[in-house]
Image (tube, rainbow over all chains, first blue to last red; front, side):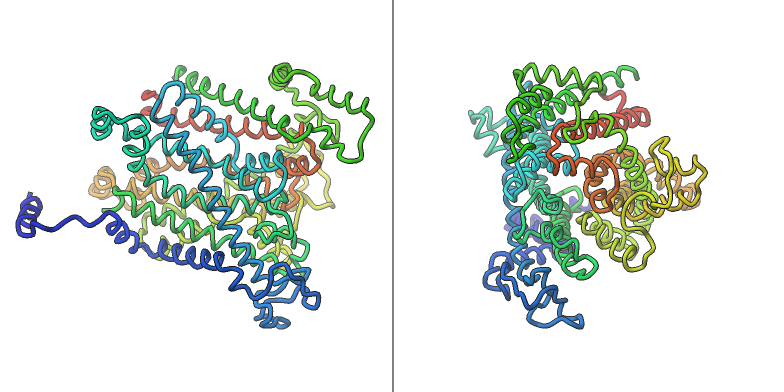
Length: 304
Length: 336
């Protein structure tokens, strides 16, 4: 009661005050989450490194220095500043390969998320909007894909299409489509009954306009969160496929592939196995931190 | 109740048929055909090629082939492995206990560590312990488990020599398989040395496979507990003067457990998927490693059968969890 009185009093004294722009409000809440800010910073650094890889790498990632095979990182006894993180079994600079690997991983994340989001979004919109038989068929199909463990499905798809980076990306994209489709459908079904949708339908909006311009923007929040988390799934799964020999093929400096191709040096030169793993972990962790932060900042129930 | 069970079971049937159709299509999507791909460049006489094609039924119409396949699946015939010529089902069933043993222990590890960690984190919300648990579980959730396994091998097996690098049992021992579960078989045989050896071999793979579920269980337990701890009945219980431990252990935990149990059930898919990587790293003779080997040997009938069987296992477990959930929570049972 008192707060209402106060609120009207404030409204009366400051008649021109406007609510902050949604983006400003979002940023205000997001900024308070330390983990999410760390995640965002790490991602920006990795993205910049990936973008300017040719300018920042100390060596060509594919040049084999025959005089420097399995050189340890600089802080170990036999290490030197020429190869800061050491070299691999055929004398290639680890740091340069890792930076080029960041390029691949970011690209994998971007392509997989774009592809799966686009297909999942379309399926979910259509299923949620039209309902009936279309809905049942689409969702049954998604259930079938979900019945298979995601990594198993990715492995099988990659095995059928044949090993390779592009096929691995396709495999991972197919596997995650159901998540986006389900999420979109649920959000669409929650929105379509609301007054503003009915109003624009009455005003004569066609199905396409209703779907894409009226309903979709109000369903975006959970999709943005899922897409961010989708980056980490994509990078992890693509690396796992690379590790199993079904993803990118050597000498591509993909992190999972790098790990697999230097396995036999695990004992003699642990750094060839350690660094690609650290790179995967840090990148995936950063996306997960960012995703969690976005979820908290975008979810009005948790906000206050 | 019966109606609830029947509805749930009938919902699974179309999914099962769909998965069967998917695995059937799989072998047909291989560029060329499985026989040609397998034979490779060496080439074989055309008569032999025809014979092999006939054995797989590849010379018949697609429709006919699918009916044959469904008939086979329903009568337990998943075809023969192209490499060993053994029935795929037999091969799978021989190896499956090793995977189940590993997955069950991994789940046990995840629950035994994750549940208390999540509870304490929720009770001490905002403390260093809470932040620590949440940080560690997010790291665990982000972990590339193939790399995690290698690190553990490097540290515990190679560095400290505490655990074996690979396999299920020392070569010193031989235990006649009865159940296929090494821990049980060694005890049945009365070989305690072998039992310890089997346990030693299990520790690292268990930790590696359990890492992601552990993170999920800890996070889920924490958020479920936080939600329940904010409820009125908890305040009432505290107001009645009940001891804190009793309120948390009895009143809060029982209600928080429902979503946690569901999440544990849903981890079965993650476990069987993760088993592919874990078994490959530790040379664990289970179905995950077998599937990867089948892919490398281009043994498509084995791959097809293995995928169908694993998917069926996941579906069966999810159905069980669903039914159990209905038994535990009457609101679910009656709402649908």
